[in-house]
Image (tube, rainbow, N blue to C red; front, side, top):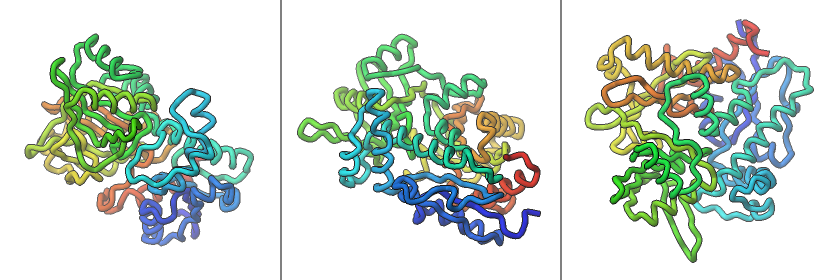
Length: 390
């Protein structure tokens, strides 16, 4: 059905488990391994998509994360754009001189602008290429999914159920004024281009007391403010510390939303990660936590949704799945999307929190006996057969 030798190309970091797991899925399906273009070679000009793409190729763009040399190259690539828009920035040369500092959040807006430039380069490399290739996820969609502000605007436009946004917030003082204006005293602050809970703060106040629950570690040394992404959940109560964290995040753009309390099971709050493939919700895991952050890398618990479905009932569960698929339809040119779905206290209307371009890393989660990568491979080849992709 799919031809003897379907050809896949992966743009990624070769040693990353995302790449190796996708290669394993190809092998288990009896397909040849994908050609891999390393980000470091792409960004240094040593590799080009036309070197490996051929008629019928399917191209998968993976996360560039977990490689500090790649991070520096993306910062270099985004330097001019960050300077032009007056975001916090570091020069091209200085970016390449950065020393590894585990967990340090370096110039996230500049990194994003560099990543967008890299995505645009991937798209343009094949713009005049006549090969009948396909991207699994379009580069332009990936850029949007990596911008929480833009994503929220698209969800609003298409009436996807989401938490209420507080709009553009430029500082802690601005945040406090906005919260007072709308009489909301619990908010989630998210770094616009963060991932893995980086730069996420759950903030609450009653006007006299303040609390920020966050993955952010604040370090101030010799007058320099440094933020680190940590797996340890911290609670800050000092107003100056909280204001410093929020002010620093705001300089690189944030998405701020009303904090909607999550439903709980077994004395732990939870949300869902749902992977939609070819427009349909396929793989679902329940992520439960003792803190507002449910990300699995924070050593939170994951489980199958069986008990949750029984508690919610079939109709409510179908509504939750429909909500995820509604969000995925915003990206019709992308084969897969990881949707974070909040089930509010009282199991009311589910709300979409985020769409994740690289949200399909769910080892061990299966749908009809297949993991996310195998399901995506089969879906990509089926869509090619039906000529729905160009």
